[in-house]
Image (cartoon, rainbow, N blue to C red; front, side, top):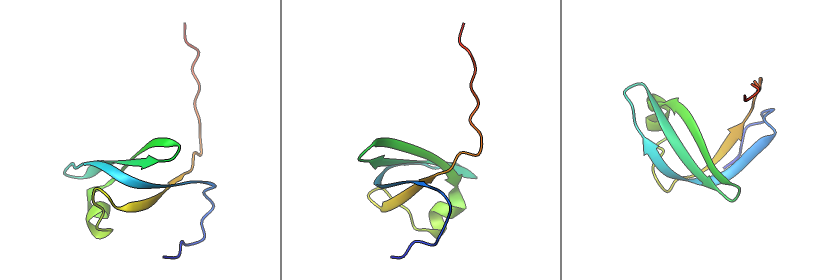
Length: 72
């Protein structure tokens, strides 16, 4: 499988460990060597990509903004 060229620098190879399906969006948990990565994607994408528990995937993380709030 080839991966298209993208500009996300943080990529984590892992296995889908849980899928919590919703009518429009779903939560996908990916277990990686670095820990658990959780993503919210459309349920349609889950179906089109044929994602299931046990599927090997790449999780791409790209943050365009990080907000910080001071705690009391």
